[in-house]
Image (cartoon, rainbow, N blue to C red):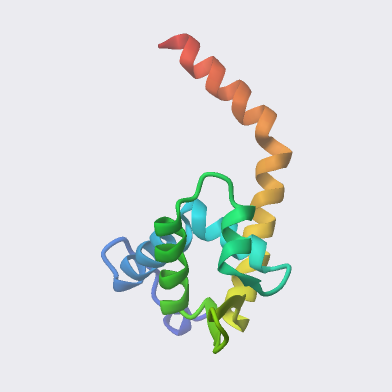
Length: 126
């Protein structure tokens, strides 16, 4: 194999790492992951989302949805009624992220006991 035909390795100094960090910071927070998982079941209204996520404030839900919409992961649809109806749904890009969040969720549930045991052993040493 001719190594000159391989793509260059990604280094910590590359722009690629900065891009990955920025995207992970946005979609890796707990509210974004929860919203992607919940919206994976279909379109929901703001009030439905707020009721389904324990502990999220109205402001945090608004900010998170706005950021997900800005990144092209969520589509916001306003129906001109009185009062206006606002629905949120995953875009195709958001659905592609959903599979990753589902896999991570399964991993976390599968390994939660191991992680908790490791935390207890670590804390006992402190």
